[in-house]
Length: 230
Ligand code: SAM
Image (cartoon, rainbow, N blue to C red):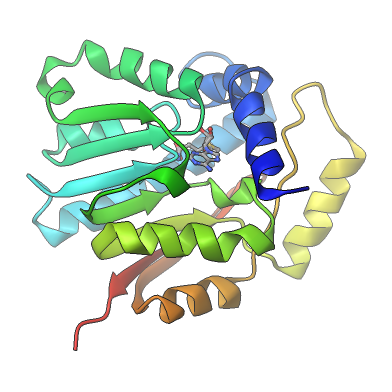
């Protein structure tokens, strides 16, 4: 599938069945056990990013690009903590939901903007660029271009999460594929950490902090890469 076709599939999914599925997972209403597990795992990822950024002590006023922001699960608390947040997502519906969730919180709305945009068309410079749980929707051959573009947008730092390609997770994924339920997602791609680290290195970034977040059905490698200075 071409790059453009792949993105069209992802956009269409997150504007239709994917929107309904992920809006529920990223909400607080009733969901099934698997979705609840994914909700809790994802929340751990969001909380870990917030903990890292707050620990640095310079979050108020920091410009942050949240690429593939979904329904604003990270963008909104970042703005609440004082950051200036530019959230964007390939899906118009996800962005509209993010805006809806933020709009009643008058203290955050001035610090937030949301646009419907593919991450590779984003422009500008931000202190920090964050991209959580987006790479899972793309095959390896598209990852170098996506990460290189995120690096070009970042003055100082890129934080991203991805499903790591390990033997245990590959087996788990295969088992999962045998039982496609009604809420089956798009294809999920795992990525080798060594490849991601190499792409960062090629773009002049080094890994600073990293952690693994795993529940029963949610696996995410979270890494922070800092622009090298010399
Ligand atoms: N980052 C959010 C979070 O962690 O709460 C949302 C994660 S959700 C699993 C993946 C999101 O990536 C969806 O909202 C989807 O529309 C968005 N997405 C997928 N491909 C994208 C792309 N090329 N550019 C921007 N957003 C994209």
